[in-house]
Length: 550
Image 1 (cartoon, rainbow, N blue to C red):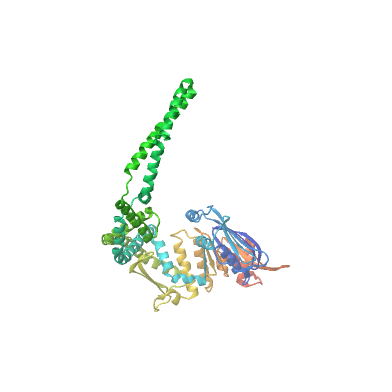
Image 2 (spheres, rainbow, N blue to C red; image 1 turned 90 degrees about the vertical axis):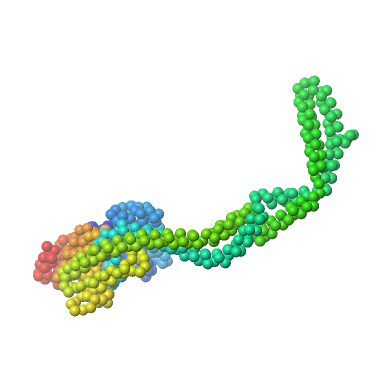
């Protein structure tokens, strides 16, 4: 519920801070006193776009802040989804800066207008005469029927099934479209795949082939250098091995003179062994090295194939060619198996359609079940509100396609008088009739779902005193389970409130200002008497006012 509202520097409001209680609150005031200004300020924290012209002082910012008690609204998931701190006492603040920019905060966290608006719709439901046109909207009519039918669980199940059905349907359409294009591409993809498969691609093969090519194409230089190395090691006079033999004899003689010479002898021995190994390897490599033009040609051919494939596919590594080969293999396989894949997807879609139809049929059944009772309640309550001949024609018919809320077409027609044809509500009902119908519908819905705070803005306009008294009775009854506000000009309605606030203007040095205060019991008597008989209070008006309050 709305527990506090603070408005600063908005239109004719300099500074206003007012607290509200539960139950039925009536707001009265003379025409032009600023009741619409109050609603305008409240609409800012509900997500309405800001208008710089509403700043009272153009050099200062406008601040509207409201506090809501939201413990019973089941909004914790909304706060979590939007990364907001949840508090059962939630504060919403809206600021309009002199430059024209506006900022919005929920529990001191900056939010977008979209988030603010979506939360606002869950907190306050504002109704004025022109807003009763939503009665003619199919979505609202379904909401009424579904709240009474109590099919929230069925609707949730249907929505889950519908999402899966739509997902599968989209996948099937994609597969069919892919099939049309894939058939054309299949031959080309198969050709590319065969090319890559014949290349027998392996990780590291390019480096290995390039190294092999380098060796084969420089075999003469390699043989020459191997021979030279072998000669350097084995020359009879100045060969490294002969010299190492002499060095070994020297170290051998020294080894008997201590451990340091023994270590030196061991190192020279190791070097000699290593040099002998190197000599053997040089000789072996030299014997194996042979000019092989055929092998060189084979290696060159493989390398050229790799380079051409890399150029063709716009890559530089064999690993990338291997990746492309895998992708082509998947495409070729997918195309070859497409018929069976599509058939499997069509079967899945049919199964989902069957389940969806079953859930939709259950929803339709529950809706059909409550329509006669709803029709009777609406007509009975409207008769009490001065519309004894009001009739409704509510029909459900099966829709061809799945809709967001089921598989029904809803016809919600109205006739205000006997002998008249049924028609759309917005075409055949007057403003006053629409107001009474809306109030009746909301009073019925209030018994079946946890509605937010409701604010009726002169919804009782254009009706007689007795009918307004009955409308007030309905609002008072609704307020036992929810917070109700009524902005009204009628004393019959104002007298029914648990709380009574007056909006008034006062002239001050800084100009004319709008203010608001809660009336004491005695002040309520005077206010109702003025509403009944004008500024000149008569004894009969005062007596009538007291009678209304009692």
